[in-house]
Image 1: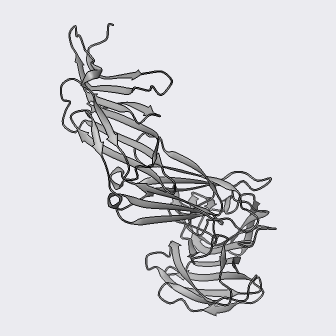
Image 2: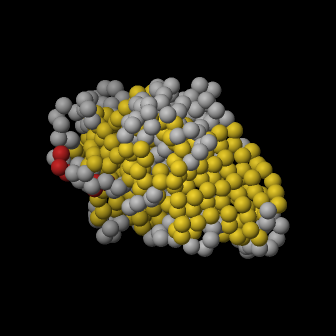
Image 3: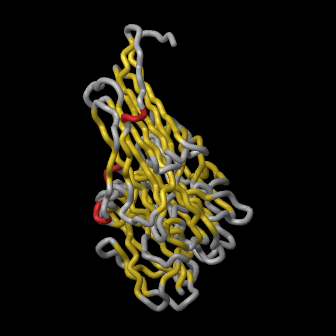
Length: 440
């Protein structure tokens, strides 16, 4: 063929045997540096490859699939080639001269299924050459454990799904169905960096598919990282977002009111009704209905005191968070561009059963965490109250060492939680979660 002069990346794959997988496996040869400045002949010889021998410590584990990617950078340009394989029989080789130091990045991910755990084994390499062969036999102590627990509130049991994949780079992940309540366990390689988790909850009849995610999950060899999805206490969350933004004379609120107990934000939470109301200097600006904790308002120019209240109701909700309300007060002035408004949220994080319940007639420790404007020591006053009668009456409980102790009532009772907060700048929050959890 005739080609323009320049730097090229060459990839050649030969699959032997019958069928899509190839019973004889695949030989993959990559030349990261192919400089074409004259007539050139290239010989690609599959006999130069060496095996990719990466396998978990459990010899009974079955291979699922793998992905290998080579990324080459040269003078600001980036090109990559990849090979996805359904066979464990893979051989690879480098071809041609070395490229520039550090210009070749290559990674390999393989997934294995065993009886009680799955394995996600990934490795990254950077240098001047593509790999010729790869051998990794990690032991159990070299791997990190990731547990993904799916809750099922009363009446919502079903089958969800879990996806796990490395955060960085083009790759394929691994998926599995998960009966709820249930736990999926993975052993993963810390060398691959952080991992992304996606959980799809069982679909509520008449509702939309509800997706949760936890991205950039850090792992460490010999340690266990656990993420619990779709369990109480459901409530407002501000991690990684400003919540309320003013842009000139427009106020926009985006505060998830039904983040789960782990702070994971649902894509399509089930609810009956939701509204957000805004007052300016005590005068009603307007009320918006629709998605929980989401609204936009146009306000008069200039500095003023505001009160914003967002409420979501879950009529017929299966036992937890039947009503969530967050009311903020703050002072805001006209801006020249998007600027965060100082609002906060309080997270309640007790350890609950997979059905959002706590032991009746027992003492429960409920950790209390502040997010948003009042985080990192900017709390002036924080008071927490508890109700055993759906919010008709409240009793103050002291916040000590970042938690409150609640003496749970008898079985079958909803426990409601309220937080009243003032930050060091005088902005306030009143947050109420009716039926935060139930006793059993």
